[in-house]
Length: 521
Image 1 (cartoon, rainbow, N blue to C red):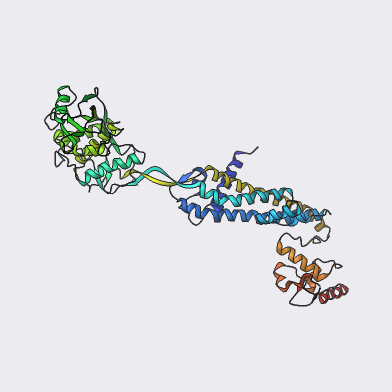
Image 2: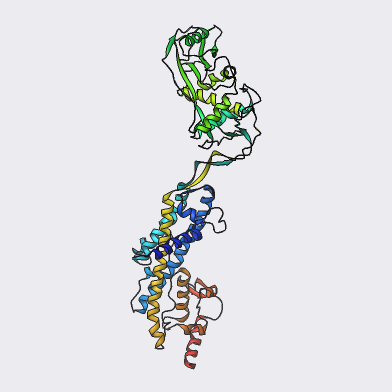
C-alpha cells in the first residue's frame, strides 16, 4: 500500500519531471508545471511556442532514457559474465537508434539488448518517431471567452439630466461601433444586448459576457399575419395596422421602391408613448414584409419589442435612458437602417431571425443615447470587457504521452538501480576477500567501446590475457585513445582490412613490452 505521504511525493516528483524535462525552465512565467499538471489549456503560452519548445525537451528525455538504457545493457552483460554465463552479442549492442534496431532484428533475428530492453527500445523509438507529429496535431490554439482591458469608449450613463440630446443620431461613429459590437459578439458566439460599455475601436474580438450586458430588447411575434395586395401602398398598410391595434400612433415606415412605384421590403414601427412625451419608457411594435418581391402578396408580421434584463437594477437604468428620448422621432430617424438589418438586398426574402435583427437595431439606438454619442469615457468600476482570446489547447493524449515517457524513464532508471545493486552484492565479497574484481573490464556496449575492444585484441594478440596490465604497454584503455588507430589493409595483396595502429609503437613491440613487464614482476 502507498501511504498518503508517498502519494504526495510521487505527485510532486511527477510535477518536477514535467517542469524539468518537458517545459522551459528558463521561462517559468510562461507556463508553470502546476498549469501543465492541472489544466489542458493556457492563455500564457502560444501554440507555436509550445510546438517549438516541446521537441527539445522531449528529445532530452528520450536521450536520457537512451543513456541509462546503454548502461543497463552493459550492467546486465557484466552481471552474466560475473556468474560465468556466456553473453550473446545481440545483448551487447547498447541503446540503438530506430534504424539500427530494425537492422539488428532483420539480420540477427533477435531483439537488441535482450527481450526486456529490446522491447523498451522499440517502444521508445515509436514514441520518438510520433512525438513531433503528435505535438503538431494535438497542440493547437483554441478560442475561448476571456477578458480584455478597457481604456475608453462608449460607456452607459443613466443619470437623469446627463443626456445632451433627446434623439440619438443614427449615422454617428458611436452608432456604428454599437452595431458592430453586437455583430462581433454574435459571430464570436456571444449574445447581443445593451452593453454597459463598448471599446472605442469596435474590437472584433468583442464577446459580451454577463457583466457586460445590462439587458436587451426582446421582440416576439404579436398578433396574426395579414396579407395585402402586392401593389398596396405602404401608407395604407400602416394605417390599417394602426386601426387594428397592430401599430401605435405616429408610426414611421421604410421601404424600397422601384421606378414603377412598386414597393417591397416594407417595415413599419412605432412607440407606445404616442407623440413623443419625455419622461416615459416605451415598448415598440414593428411590422415587417415577409416577402421580397414587388408584385407578390405582402404578408405583414408584427413583433412587439420590450426591454428585458436579468437584474432589476439594470432594467431600471435602461428605463432611465429610454425616458430621456423622444421615442417616435428617434424611431423615425433610425428606420432607414432597418432594411439592411432585415434583408439581404433587392428581391430577397426577410432574414430568418427577424426578432433578433429588430432588437439589435433598438439596442444600438439605446446605447448611443445612454452613451451620449461620446466614445471618450472610461469605466473606473470595472475596466474590462468580454472578448475572445486564443489559448493553447493541450490534448489529453499529449499528457498521456508525457506520462508514458516519464514511466519509461523511471522504469529504465529503476532497472539500472537494480542491476547496480546486484553488481554491488557480487563485488563486495570479492573485495572483502582481496580478490580481483576487474577481470571483466571492459564490457563493450557501443560503437566506440567495440572499436576499443577490437583495437585491444589486435594490439595484444589472441594469446594474451589482458586487463589492467594492458595499460603498462600503452594498449588503448579508453575510447579517447582510439585516435592512434585506423582501419586499413595492413598487408598488400591480402585484401583483408583490420585494425592497425598508425601512431606510436607498433603492436609487436607493445606485446614484447608486456612480456618484459610481466617477467620483471
